[in-house]
Image 1 (tube, rainbow, N blue to C red):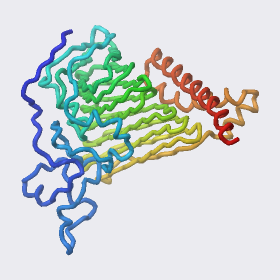
Image 2 (cartoon, helix red, strand yellow):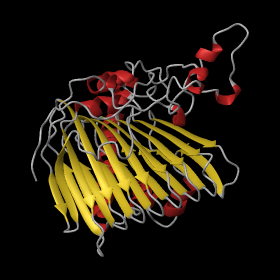
Image 3 (cartoon, rainbow, N blue to C red):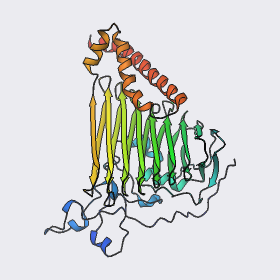
Length: 441
């Protein structure tokens, strides 16, 4: 394993594209003056109006229309009015939205089996861009700043390969990272990216699942309380291949993980899970995207979160697109949030686009609520104290997703971490109550 830090001329091959959310003229696409991918088009029947100008003022309205580019200048400065930034605490994220990030190689600890490789590659390695390109300014800033690429390869062997990568030494300066995870044809295994310590980090994670492969990728955010982390994760799933993608966000001050999966080959299958627990003052965001772009694909999205403490804020935005070639698609997404105390906020926005009627099924759901009093009553009626009953309800709510990971040792660690979050929250609430009573007096 070697560390490589180089700065050759960028070879991303990105074409000039309009700024995100910038209106474009639909006729320019038709005339071939601008690439069709990611452009504002004649969406939802919008046409030029007699009072003029509407043909040049159609904004980017859906996830599938966002422009993609590896160039930072393709994205204007973020104002907070953009649909994909309107909830985020921009003051804390600002250092990650401009140039000047340190994209050099960083220390990590890798535990792997014989059929898996982890190595550093150059910034212009051919694997870069295999799974996708940035769709927002934070991802583009990290993309342009990369000096080294961490390449993770799961080989096709008879065994179920396993790789665990622990990262805990990013420091407090603005950093960029780029990781490419590749599962070779018919390979099977699990890759865990375990984030700890403190960080001010923007990164891109590319995931390529070749034909017939079965891969699980776990992104674990167990940061210190002051960490700020933005992660854009793209996945490309091949023919009859399967990707299980799991996001677990527990620690950190601001954590924004946006995974997207492109099912671009027949029979591609994905399950995307998420578990998150926000404490007082903590911000956790996930923007999930599944693009059914081939026949007979399947998608399942299930994210669950809990919130406790004043100022705890979570955001979940789920986008599913069933394209014109998505005949036979079977897709469903859902988000559930459990509110444990007053003073929290959970934003949950499921979106579904369907461009063909020849599908097996599609749906979405979202719910945010407090404890089910009947559940608590049932447990207390059997002699279980109220605090213990609450703990069991929360664990039962979140463990359903944790157990989907398929790695018993990691699952046990996460369950213990959730229990610790609950204990810390109860302590904080108990400490705050006497202060509130004194203020009322």
